[in-house]
Image (cartoon, rainbow, N blue to C red; front, top):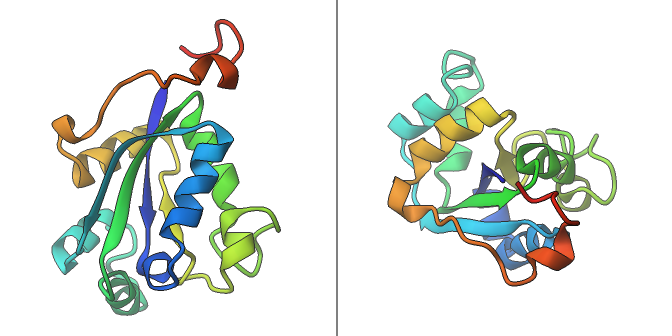
Length: 154
């Protein structure tokens, strides 16, 4: 099993979509291994978006990410990073395919509802940034046998 990070951004929180988005991940067969609401500040955003921190749009990005609390999720499942990235769709909501989270709920490149880790390596780094080890739970859901075929859940 893989675990990845998803952040439900202020655009998700303010639009009252938290439950809907979590429901979509669970309905797909992924399970929530960790969940918490938190208020981000500039230091954590500079770390999280280090590759963008020197770009002229960073102040606007940081302000939008601090506009309200976010919900941080640790989501587990077979190939969770790739499955979650496919579910979230293109970063720019206007370009995201219908049926994806951004395609269904976003019209923006910045106010795009969710952040999702883009690789297993980055997922490990990002999970450690937002969760302490004891806040992520490794458990087998009661329905796992109905989600994965024999031998698929590794």
